[in-house]
Image 1 (cartoon, protein in one colour):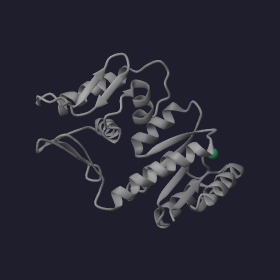
Image 2: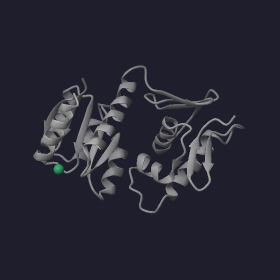
Image 3: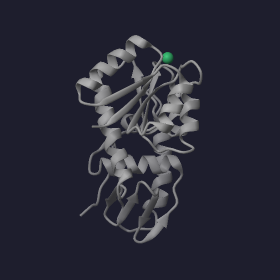
Image 4: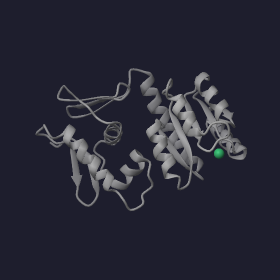
Length: 226
Ligand code: CA
């Protein structure tokens, strides 16, 4: 049974989420204050942390920053609508995902399942993803193609990981922007094209068989062509 820490100062919301998660079979502890939440997160042996941003004591981003010095426990940020900066900062600080308030419980449960799966993989031998002769060791943050290590920035790594997790599926720019950058779609997707170009230069440029393909008018897909 997975153990989840919920750090949220809106008591009504916290109680509701606790009830729903308990109903799903999770063990849930609550903290209403950032400082207490951080202490519990560091010492409680949790499998996952749900972390609000606006908190008394210590705000959620600061809790996350301090927690990441010593812990890789998956963290899902609970963010207010329109707080794009919070999401970006959260993901850059090491959050695994975010959910925008108000969220449906189904959406939260889905994100929790994904984050827990990812966490499990890292706890064991580490998640290995691959496509053709390209391999990614997620826990060690190592990418190789044809036996040669490829250096990627944090964002390039996150982008490639998302492509690998959704291998052979065509992904739209909007999807990539939301899942890799944490932005909601606001009509601006150039950043995706720019990063896909960076990534291509590193993983495909030196090889005959290209892995990252443009699907005209739709988006991109990572797959091995026959
Ligand atoms: Ca709050």
